[in-house]
View 1: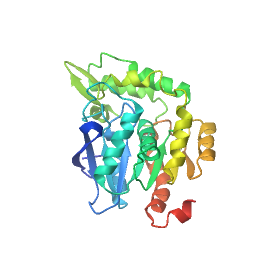
View 2: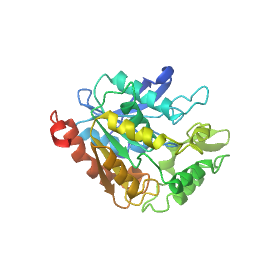
View 3: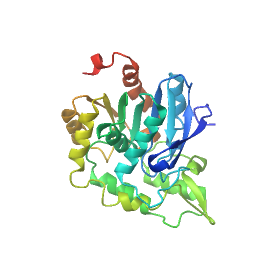
View 4: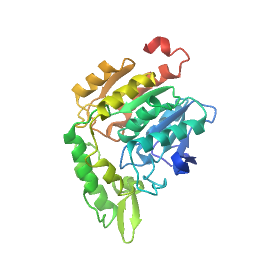
Length: 295
């Protein structure tokens, strides 16, 4: 059972090339779909407090593990190009057979943006980008990759992993205890290692802001032609205020809100404030007349 008190249902989706994507689902089958896509190096359990809360507001919430993460399958060839993740998002949307709202954090947000804004565009209702825009601040992105590179041999126990994560997220008022880390780890021999394919780092490192990517993402955001809400962590070192302002200035249907006291991992840092920030947007997105309200 999750922290929100509602046990999710389990479901598998078929991603690009038929890869198996594990997902948790909350809410009634008749409710409109909302897909939560976690960041790189996370798992679907990043949304364990968010999913059940959104389900109580009338959404059918789907939170998959991205390929190479959690209990989803790994890419057989080690390919974790951003375009492959976008293809997985398209496959999930197509399997749902309805217009979902996509909420994507970091890697999940970039994947959703390309899935909706590049051909063949996934048909969606709206998009929420959680602390991700068209260009990351290298100080923040380099810090994240360095953390993912650290401890290549894993940890002796879950407590040691929790201590490493707490040091990385030193701004958090209430760090997660050891039990909160278990879903982010897997056993490897007598060690605990992160629950993702280590080959992911070959795609992440040195490719966080390749030439032409910023313009590609901005084009995708404009071509998606859906309401977009950019939720920035108020103390994020990955998305600067300047970049967030640039994104909204160049994407006509984009709006921005900051979550005070949150870093890059907005949901984990300030989940209640995150929900407060997105619920008004989601209510507008659910309305059949949303086009008249978002321009």
